[in-house]
Image 1 (cartoon, rainbow, N blue to C red):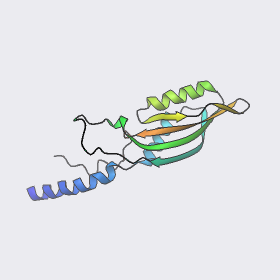
Image 2: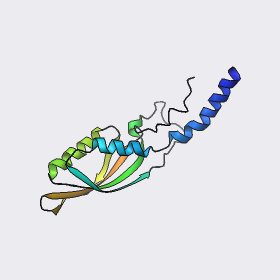
Image 3: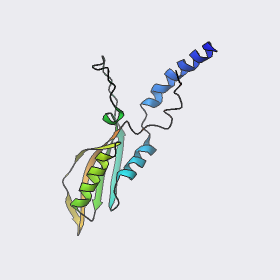
Length: 140
């Protein structure tokens, strides 16, 4: 029994790093959909994973919370007819989601009568986890 448990723990230690750094894109899109207020349209979208950096020697014994670790970056262009109020609502909704952060944005410009547009870079935090993350965890 003890040998089998040791084997399971060894396999889990091999498997966990594989999914631990995985970006769960369906979760990213769900977080973006949930945090984007109605009234605006995402006109362009691109995304990329962010390489996770690990320190050679830990500087602290306190683990970094998942909300402080960026795992992916999104580039978006948005349009809305309600102007600045929509941008303000979008900005605070994204930053308040706990899963996404606004890393930067361009100025708001008028793209049509009563239609504004802007571009933004949004960070995805490690709060967006893969559904496979728990599959390889073994209680100690």
